[in-house]
Length: 164
Image 1 (spheres, rainbow, N blue to C red):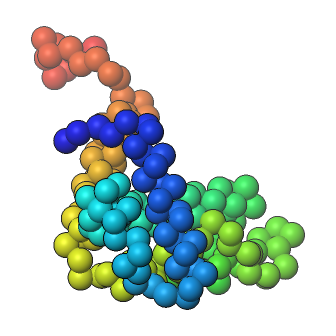
Image 2: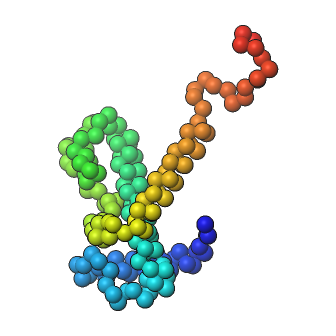
């Protein structure tokens, strides 16, 4: 696996942003041919751009979950209501008025529409697989670092079962 330079990453993210802005302007969800040359040069083809858009979607989704979790913790919520597919969170609990919070960290519907339009593309299947693999590895690493309360990091293998 190669590591891309910061300048390459910045160029790719900028191109992805420009393409999405163009799609938002036209209302289209499929990549217009006028971007083909730049997409090919920067990403090596449509698959590379789709992988970048998928990364953006997963990043936005993680940020959104983080915001919702922090809100719930700060508000002292014991239960979440009004949460339908992460589209809103009703403010409940102490001082809550039942309003559904505006969720500005939500992944854009345009980004989701573009990814849906290319749902069968092999690059998206691979990007999703990579995301899940990275998530699984992060969870496994995190769980190995945590020790249950009351346990010691060091274990003396030379002591017998009844030894103090």
